[in-house]
Amino acid sequence: MKIKGRMALAAVAALCGCQTSNQADYMQIGYGPSFDVAHAQCELQKGSADQGYIAIGSPGFVAGAGIGNALGNLAAEDQYMKNCLILSGWKRAPHGQGDAAAAVASGVPPTTYGIARAPGSWINTALLDWSDANNKCIAGDKTACATKAKLGAKLKAAGINPSPV
Image (cartoon, rainbow, N blue to C red; front, side, top):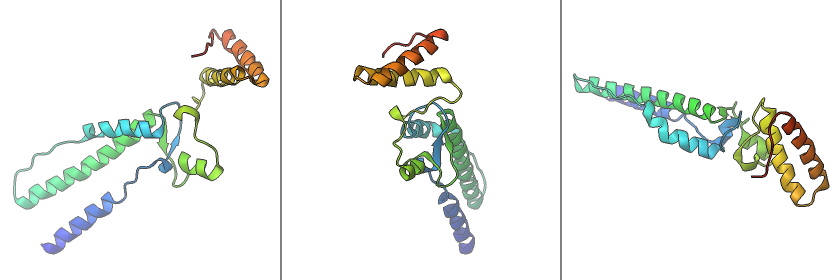
């Protein structure tokens, strides 16, 4: 009996030791909050994926049902976190290819305000670029003023009137 208990404990420890969750494992795939904000929001809600259990029988059966339920809940929470982070604009990256690892390796600072340009939406990108150009223009950058005027004309042609926020 002691051998079976040790084997079960070793299996649970091995399964639990495989979980990692840091920004180096994720890459930003769309518009959304920074990784820390998205991860915290998902972490607060992941308990909703847990399922309870009822087991009646021998102590060994009840313990086995509890361990099985715990493993099932871990898998459900992991899937919930994956889906929640995707909805927040983050996706698991192949090992070592996440945003944090890529930014450190290339020396590129993280995205401004913790958001990335929205993929496929030229209007959102143009609005963010217009805002950046407006701030630089106010500071006296003549090139930024020309960029601001050009982007402003494109946005107005699309029916959007940009204004400083």
